[in-house]
Amino acid sequence: MELEAWLRKLAEELGIFDLTLDDDGVHTVLDLARDAAHEVQRPAAPLTSFLVGVAVGRGQSLGSAAAKATSLVLGEA
Image (cartoon, rainbow, N blue to C red; front, side, top):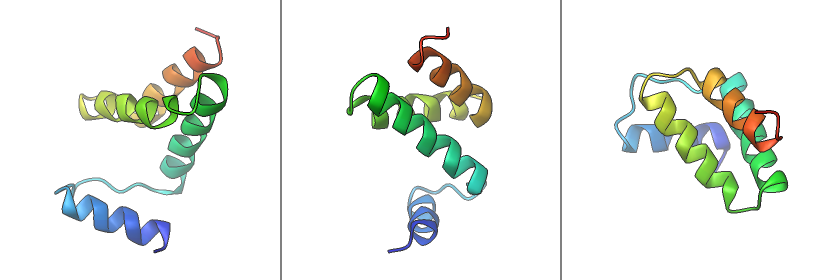
């Protein structure tokens, strides 16, 4: 299944009708997962993405939450 179709189907199944994950958002999350997997360890990728998602759900922007996580992953925080 194509990624975009999968994301639409998953969002619908989860009842997320008010969010559109554009190309920038997809790249932000994928870059974050890559950095966490390479700089911490592989299991950090989905768990870091999950925690950033929780932060977004609680009101932070994706860009801000991902930037904080990336900074921490890369030892810049």
